[in-house]
Image 1 (cartoon, rainbow, N blue to C red):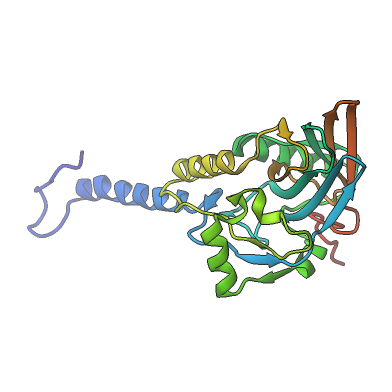
Image 2 (image 1 turned 180 degrees about the vertical axis):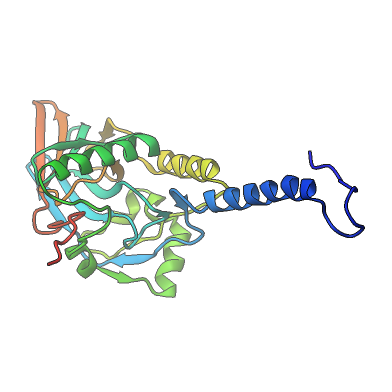
Length: 272
């Protein structure tokens, strides 16, 4: 509580008054500054049109397409200071029997597999662990740097494209978005306005991740296609995405080669 000290000249605050008032002003400033840090849901996403898939793979049973990877400050991003990657994929069961997708991993350039994570806290923790591991190998990692080929494959969306994405619910609209092979994929994630303080911001980000993330295991009926939205800790210059699934014959694995599409991702260039 701030008291009113009247033992000084009228209209002037005494020394005691100053000592009481100034800390509260400083506290207000600190609270305001704290709201600016950490991850936060953006008021508006970074909309774009992915005109072609980044990479794809298939076998006699399953086809998998990597349509995009949303990284920090890159096209499609919906959160500020995102220390994670969001992989947008399509999977299609080409067989006449049901299958179940049981696991997805991303393998980085040091041949370390990254598992998907359920929330913001786990993603950030794992990303920091990856950065430390690369630092020990003499490689500097920075989330969102070295986007390379990603920048070539994306173009800023027109007003019409943004409207179309909003009408269909963005990437979260379901399998219909990727149903036409070779069609332009419009990605404009649905967003919520961020909170005021860091804790609220992070809570909103976490809820958004939980809402967007596709649950694995995932069942696919015969000839069915679905979109996947999977969150991973940062994987520097990833070499492949590996998908594990089961069908009537047992366990199978399918690998998407990402060495060209994602070369140099998250690797900070060395300046001389």
